[in-house]
Length: 316
Image 1 (cartoon, rainbow, N blue to C red):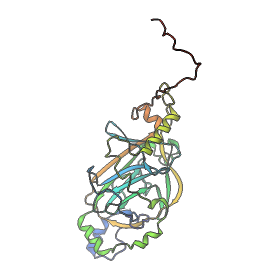
Image 2: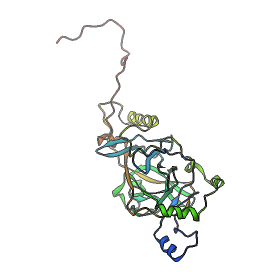
Image 3: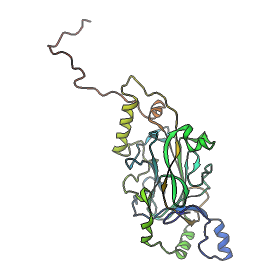
Image 4: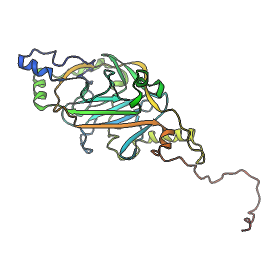
C-alpha cells in the first residue's frame, strides 16, 4: 500500500525488521498505495453507512458530476475528451484501503480487476482525487472519457466491462493498526512539500458519496454542464438525442503524482463496501431513460412578426 507521499505498489512490511512470526504475518498483508496526507476534509459523519464515499469529478470545474439513479444504479454523463477524477473520502477514524476499478481494470496494476488486488490507502478522514492510471511511483496517465474503441480496456482486449467505475473498501485490522503505529512514526509534515499538482488538491466540498446520494444533482456546476450538453445534443423536444458510440476511459497524458508503499492488514478478505458508478454519454443516457429527455422552454415572445391588433381565432 502507499503512504505519504504515495509511491508505486511494493512488498508489504519490507521497511521494518520482523521476527519469523511477524514475517509470516507480513505475507498476509495487502499491498497498496498510501496517499499523501492532506488536511482532514472529509465529513466526519458516517451518514450513508459507507466507510468511504466515492464521486466522479469533472477536472475542468473541480465539481462532482451530477448523479442520476435508475433501477437502483447510479450513473454520470461524461463528455468525450474531458478528463475526470475519482474522488474518495474516508469517513472513518481509521485507515482504509480502496481497490479501484475502471472499465473492469485495476487502476494501479492494469490487471483485470478483482476485489482481492492492491489499492490505495486513505488515512483517517482523508479525501483524495485519483486522476489516472498509475504508471510509476511518480506518474499517472490521466483518466479521459473516450469512444469505446479508444478506451484502455478495449485497446488491451477487454471491452466487456467498459462503462463502469467501482471501488471495494476494506477496513484495517485493529491490532495491525496498533502495531504499525508503534513501528512507523508519523510522517513529518514537511514531507508534504514534495507533492505535486492536482493530486494534492482535495477539497472539503463534494465529499458526499455519489453512490449514497439518491438521484439529487451533486453540484450546480454539474447541472450547468448537463444543460449545455442538452442544448448541443437536443435543441428541441421533437429532436431526441441521436445514439452515439459508448464511452470508455482512455489512457491520457502523463501527469506528476507521487505515491509510496505501505503495509495494510485487512479486517477481512471480504470488502466492507462495494460501490459502482456507471457512465456513458449524455445522449445515450437519455435514450436509455436514465436522464429525462430535454424539453424546449416556453418563450414569452417567440415571434418578431408584424404589429397589429388581435385577430379572431379560427372558426371551429
